[in-house]
Image (cartoon, rainbow, N blue to C red):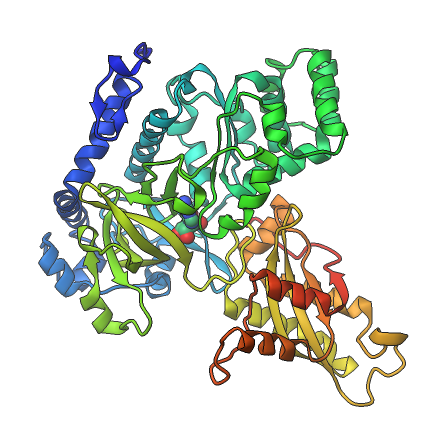
Length: 610
Ligand code: AMP
């Protein structure tokens, strides 16, 4: 294996992006330059490749493409679709139909998106070659990071990476999250040594599906190698906070293992035991240091204190993850947070060419070789149906300042597929636009990868409210918030109840007198959780990354006060609608000051991996 010797900027080329850290980086940076400079030509080539590869598919034949591979024919014949439109085709593939339905290449597996349809994870068909494309995008991240943080080849990354349980479709194809697929692939497991990508976590720990054992081993190895750690990360901010929470809960056991040099019997996975056994030696000094840092209960800047050489936190804090920025600033002691890439199960999109910028300034450059990208203008009163199709613009034609919904055509066979992300153009790198991630359409509540929309919340409230009927109570109004003050975060649902005259009298004392019994309200919490989508329930049950749902009952008249408050801030009385989710701190304060009582879900909802 060629070891990279050149680490000084002078040894490698200087690109428009900056001086490369080594020859290999120079190549990668030149590649980024080439792709972005020729974004339109690359897009044309990508579309032609996709249409050639899939020319014999049932899908493209249905639209009468007749082997055409040009943009004009593609745009005139192929319609824009959502996941729901493709569900019949996807179901057939899942059931074992191996004919070329969407893709000319065999479907190798399904990627289970955290986006859901009818409560279930969306199933994204993928092909083997997509792994290479994902790998290609990953390979661009460190060369860009090395432009901003020198010397990352002199140490390691403490990354908390996890696989989730997987299942098989009736037709026998694996169905699993895209990162699980990647970590289990040879691309990851047999990756050649790269001094810029050395992790403290043994691969065996990453590949263990038991969340506790995996986290324990990854944390332990990160502690053992603490001085080598130059960056600390997880995919999303919520994942890193979960790791910090884990340290808060388990530092005693971890320190004891380090002191004795013996791994706790709670970790039973043989591969982990073997991998950790190679690293763990009795080290009383380190154990004492960990105890000293953790025992005081002062967690401010804990990352910097335990891993003093950390240069930055590598986590996504854009989109739904922005809510965690203050907490990460607290634990990280103000360390920079780098958001490096933007990706999905459907397609990996692009990377942040200025990863050390402030979280509020993050823009992602969509890399034109990853798929064929179109953009649907997203404005008030945007066109729908056929008219919308006419409005789709190409990657290089988007305008700075405007917002668009991302529409993608992939090598795996998705054609003009609406991803559901709203992006705003902030500028261009060469001919390739840079985008700020604005939000995901229709997402009301999100703690980690869960995405609960308004209809799901409404359905859950209705289901739970049915339990109130025997008590003569109905839910007059409701709203919600994702409460992330404590880790794990949890959903809070504010309920204003209406009690039928004469019912529930004498159920208790004082203000709660006529409310349904606490037991019933707790059952309502659980009932709401049972009604949530599978990603929510999996996070609750298998990952423990979402805490028990809470119902806060507010006193009568609270929602009227909420309306008055909004009107006083300029809302129109004719158009006023109760917000189904609140994030504005004064409104949350108002609601919280009117809470009569709060109840939590007493147990986990049902969830099974298969
Ligand atoms: P999934 O299909 O479960 O892989 O989720 C993909 C979705 O996660 C994207 O469509 C985005 O909505 C969101 N996402 C991925 N990367 C980012 C990012 N860097 N910033 C904000 N949201 C992101």
